[in-house]
Length: 618
Image (spheres, rainbow, N blue to C red):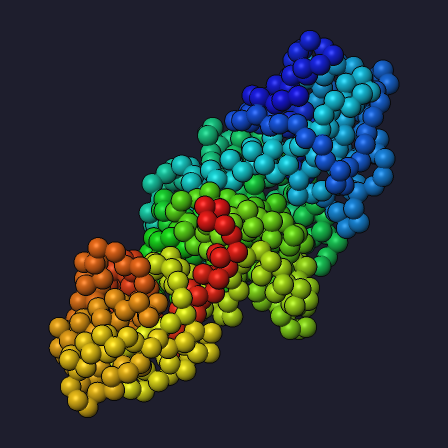
């Protein structure tokens, strides 16, 4: 059997008769829930054929024909199927319990022949589906997250981050409402698409016509940002599905994270509705997201439109961490492609985001802030699929007992023993960092710089003290100071006056206002085969801007730059902002302290060792 363009052709027994599967595909997918009676089906069809394969993991066979007249919630022509299980779902799998007597609802026949049984699985991350004919097993067809509904879901998830039109449900002119700030983010940022306020109590919001409900919106709305009381959310999500909205940002809190049965029930309802419509939801309990590549700020933080576009995609469970890191990025000139708060992770979690960003050419580095999750193995698998082709960094919170408990309460996440998490991150090839500061520094270095191929580092400093601090930190990071070749040492000796410390770390202070000498020393150590990377430190504020520009221009002028150079420029407010404006994307990264510069170099070395685990070419 092969699935192409929504049609399953059985090559044996029936002479190639076609089974139109769009209703079945809408019903059996990532979370194995189907549309209810009369609900319109998603229009998308798979792009490429899926080949048959058997699977022996987590399968629960279901076989036999539905008695005549027993249609339950089913509709459509033909005789339909019961969904009796052999065995149960895995313990703790809350996605598939309590959904009718047979565990599935609303399968649409759509022309299925009588007596066709099914084989389904209980893995929430990827559900194998086998098709039988007249009681005999033909082949197993895997409909995983890469399969049929998965293709619809991930296509919509990709479109969610590139909307051409956005509806704001709960839009407001009242500064005290989140809907006010979402409107401000969209209208005063760089978004060039249509914005539709939705509020039944207003005719006009922010000078735009307001719509009383989602159902009365024009056709073709790509994204809905929802900021309304939690009890109203299920009805709005259902309306979004019926309207054909591609994705939702659910800012509203008050779901699973509140440890209240009512919150759990709301979470279950919204999850069921979203699954039925293959509707990706960012959140709930999120600040939203920013996509600087296309100028979309779908959040309640208008200031995030100031983030410089770049190649780092940052995904966080915590909206507060998004604000911490987002404002740090603005202050330090770090360029982001996306900043995403996934919140309570209703159906978009870290595995989904990693797989999405793996295919995103704008995301050259993936940075994660993790408190906890229910599917860590899938994160490991998603990261391993990249095979070192794109760096993934993670800052794991909730390491202590108190922190673990707070993480569970904050986003309803399963945190767990930090030692287990640390091992899982290593297994996945994810580079773990120890602070928000390091997460941004390491991502910035990995995005902008060539790889560090070895541990030998040259430290060039305007003064001896910062150079010694950097030298200590270099060794603490598992690196070592380079021992210059004799020819390199002679070149340095010729360029420095007698009083300078000429061995590594090099004190260039006496020559600091002599650009020819400074750039000559930098060139000498870069050309030395005994050097793998350079830390370039300048503590003279009045010389910072001119020197940073000269170093940048020199590095740009080199035909090839195969070694990373990290600068450390200390300057007061006012001058520091000008230093940050120096283009740092051509092999030169600037950080404010010797310790941070050396730590970022250490992260480059750690990533080099991670990449060595994978064969060249992936």
